[in-house]
Length: 371
Image (tube, rainbow, N blue to C red):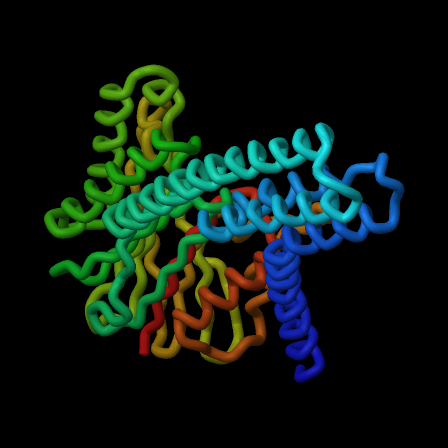
């Protein structure tokens, strides 16, 4: 166990050292280019020129450094250009041309630096907006709701993306703690809009509807209205797989309605893991026009010390380099009970390692533990 843990830690440290070393090299690369240019000019005949090294230095500094550093790099490159020509004689026409070339490229590098900095500022603003949107659409649930320990985690497949087509929500209601985890068809802003519709409808219905089946019906109607409003392909093919759960207060039971979603896993305190399946198969939300079957909530025991793990297919369909799926039931079997927060964090890290660091689909995890 210790050896395996050391291997994981060592790999993580190596991954952290790699980008850090690259950043240090990039920081000193302009100075190395100027030094290389000086050495080149000293070691070659006068007919050879080192101006490509001197012009490259401020261009390399422009996207990586501040404006002051970029200008300073250009000034040093200019002085180096003048110095290597001054050792032969007074600057001739070629020397003047090379000096003007360095000055021109340094000015361009300063302009590039300003453009890059403005782009970084806009990107930072966009990231702040995306984070605010994530907190609004998928707020982090409290660590304890209705006597249950709760933890959620969202892992986006696309780098730099904060929210996509997966969703989760937790609501403490007069009928117990109600939860939903789902996956909207499609990607992009259309999927995010559908996520907002589903979560908004769920929070309202969870408070008002007496049964979990009625909550599912409200979500069905909300998605149907959204599809008609948006039109296009979403009106014909838009759907959302979802699993809804209800944990009555002090009851020790679990009610479940599954609409075409991967079944949740029930992790017992002794290490046993079993999927919680619905009594009857049902179509995903938003596909009511293909057929109407009444939802029937399945009831299961939810003993003390057990943890309910709801997830999207980003977990169960994550593949490694050989195409092998990540099997959460097999991976979690035999593990002792742990806090929900540690559980979802560990799962996210394991999936990242299993896929080699790149997810092909978003992943939402929601863990609920009965103390």
